[in-house]
Image (tube, rainbow, N blue to C red; front, side, top):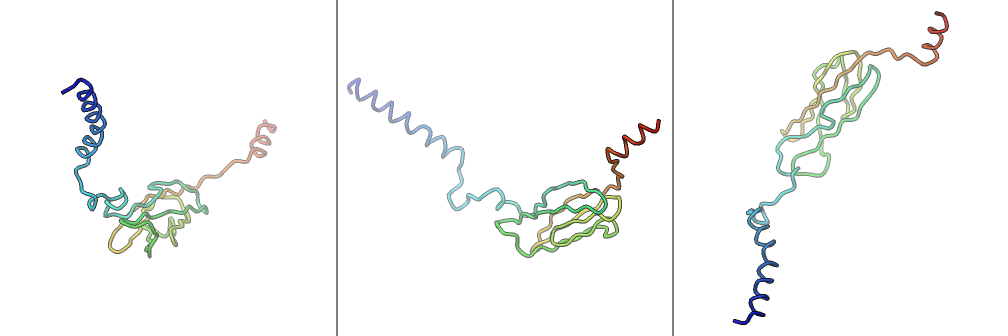
Length: 133
């Protein structure tokens, strides 16, 4: 075997090495490969935790297992006195914490919403208080 043939053989071997390593790292066949969101069996609700004030709203989003669509999701709140939910939109009613549940075809996901009752001080009010002192 000539020296030239050995160099060519080594180059071909090096070129095939990444393909060989890729097959070793992912032993699944093509039919077993799924997107990460298709491998889950639960609904994922985003954001998983949020903070709102009384009277404010936040829109939650449900990611469904094995799909890219929204589907027909049923939303539920653990305490309607603290927060209401309609179509994923949560409205804070009074201070407290609730769990919002999204259910789709037997799959469930949850998010926590904390509602706070904070009085905001406007800059003008703060300046008037300082001027009085």
